[in-house]
View 1 (tube, rainbow, N blue to C red):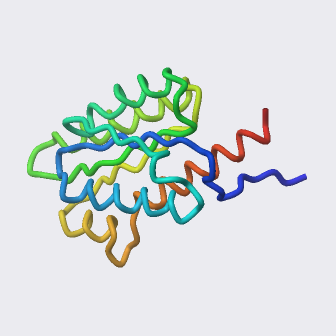
View 2: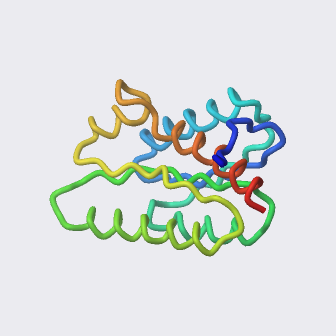
Length: 153
């Protein structure tokens, strides 16, 4: 037996948690996520967007949204770009751990669409450049995970 989720967003409700830090990149990821949802049958009014200061704060917002029971999936997007100090390592690691913790303890799929890049150029490539759009990828994963979990219940 093979069980897999369909890519039909019709009737699903999504929360997108987006970081204002590196907003030029984050907005491109947001556009990709929303486009993916719409192209897979989701309605524009089925997407709620929640801005927070940075990627470090994303898990707190995602956790509150997950506990609300209002959304079928939560998509976390942002960009952490390496600088000259170890700050990148701490923020990237804690954002990833936090989102993973919410995903495992929450009531719905929580997708990690936070870019971690060495340069702004790399982040631009992954947010709508030749390397694709990780916001789109996170939204596609959210749709598939909701539909997969529906079949497991």
